[in-house]
Every structure is written in C-alpha cells, then in structure tokens.
Image 1 (cartoon, rainbow, N blue to C red):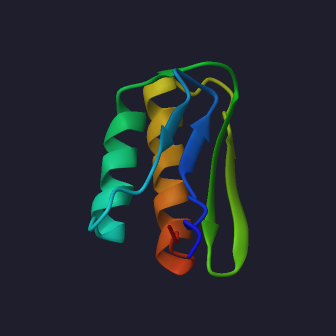
Image 2: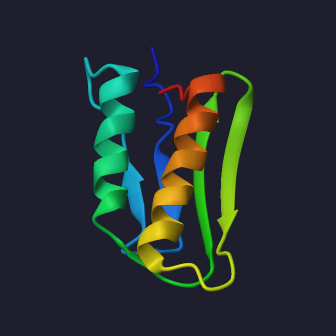
Length: 94
C-alpha cells in the first residue's frame, strides 16, 4: 500500500506564506482552523492573496484582490472570510 499524497492548504501573498498539512486523526474543521490561525498572524505582502487546497472536486483556489484604500488588516480578514466560505461549499480533503 503506497502512502497517500498529502493535500495541504496553502496561502500566498503573505509573509511568510503558510502551508498547513493535515495531521493524523485531525478533523477537517481543526485542520482548517489551524491554517486560519496561522494566516491571521501573517503580514500582507502585496495586493493579491491566494489560498489553494484540494476538495473532492479537485484543485480549488480562492483569490482576493485588495480594494482601493483597504488596510492590510481588513484585506487579510476579507480573504480569510472568502476562503472559509469556499471551504464550507467545497471542503478540503487530505
């Protein structure tokens, strides 16, 4: 039996970029929460944030563009909301 291919959750456009692997016996909700907490502690690096993961439908990518005059904190918060909403519809797989 070959080991399964991991499907991490990765957010780019932040310093540092965040990649969160699923841990054995971890629920999907706890995995997503661990990733979200790591992203919340990052610094925005530019005007585009992207979170990529794999759902049962295949590769998913949530991209958020900074709005004119938007602060880093609001931009990051809005992106976190965007990817969490997508993950409700298309949950990540590990």
